[in-house]
Length: 610
Image (cartoon, rainbow, N blue to C red; front, side, top):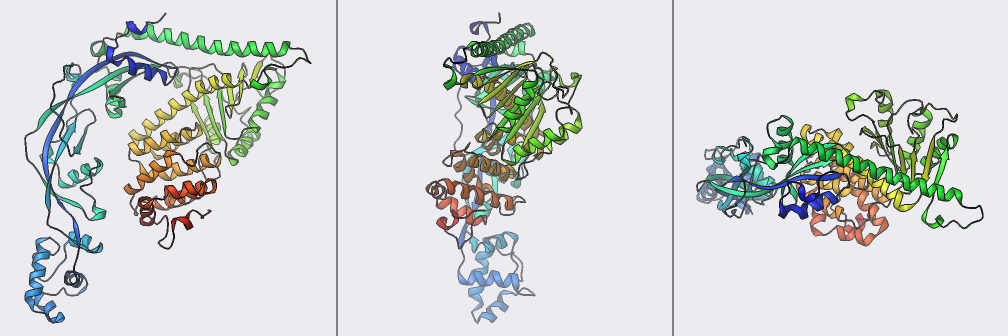
């Protein structure tokens, strides 16, 4: 019997959060939870900001002349052309030089900054100062900026630095270049440096000494029974600090930190808990299968004319030998939106051209197909790995819009052999779905075809959780390598699981806007299959991200096409919902990014049918 909750090294005031974490999935168990603190560095700085004002007629003419005349004119030459007293010209050029729109030398020359403002029909106003705070965080390894200063409070908790050497050095604020300051201010969400609007941070200086600010965090050691994996998680309240968590996991893998000293969790305790949890999970799986066997037995023993009490709630029917392959193909052919398969092995006896053609037909009508495989605990220990040529053929199956419809990957450490279609039909038993020898001779195999809703749901949640965990690992890997292909695979798995909101949240949090067109394609599929409702909050969130997109982005054409199709699809379901999405701010972004044309109106736009 594994340790009771009260026997684990868990801080009393973290028990509610531990319950929430474990409630997310039946496979998760928190082995330890502890509150700690660490120090940030807060440095007050002053930034100078320039904002635009519309230029007057004389200013416009002088700047235009300095750009277009060859050779550039002097003040006296320009006064002669305009028939004005040179005093007027020199007074205006002096003002423009003060604003750094014209260079200090003669003849008249426009500065790069002056050109930037001129293209927007403006000149800069005199700069004004604003005080903000630079926050250096050694755990996130980032510098952020905020308007309000952090409170300097005493936190009576152990210092994380007493257990771990936090040597993630962050440069002193004063040593950063102006460009670095500008980028960090933008990334922090402060509307102080907005070059597209003509608002520019022109300089900065440190105005007070750096302060040490203490911050409270929570550390969790979590065991995932499905993945047979231990992970370390750092949280600020309920927010997971991804960078810090990943860093601690690397240190732990390298043997540079001890869980015994960090949270009083010994290797013996971890081993004891792991074995107990795995035993419990296996028992739960067996209990689920035993319920199915009992339902099948009850169904089989009913008299032919007896009313089936389970008809309205589904059935569990036992299939044997030659019935199995036929039922497998029939169930696959019935799929409308989703197929999930777990088969310990995959071979070409099953995944032949006929089977691949069937999967392509499913893909053509918008069905997602998730295939998990593997029986060993480590992928390198598999004695029958999937042949590379089969994996390649499966991954080559695409949706009509070019997205990978079949996701196939190693999950491992499972004897489970299951097929779930549309969350309505569950096939389970002793049959190796993707690796039998292709014959139909009796070999004593049996499979249960289950349509009892709550039992299908239990099986779905178990398998979907494994696929979701894999998607999350793929995503983390794609972030580390900035690998676009891996990121797309993650998004496709989330979409196949109906988790488009998670996909969008990850895109937003990691500022990977290049993936927005992919997400829009996935959302369009969700709309067409009715897995996403037209009034989903996800669309409002995605529209807010448009303000961060430049018209110069390489992916802008795909983004334009994506939004036209998505708004059109929403309008086909509910025109009022589509119009509500196109508020004044969103419509302004649609025009700026050429998603809509100046001649369009929101009413005209929603009638677009790509």
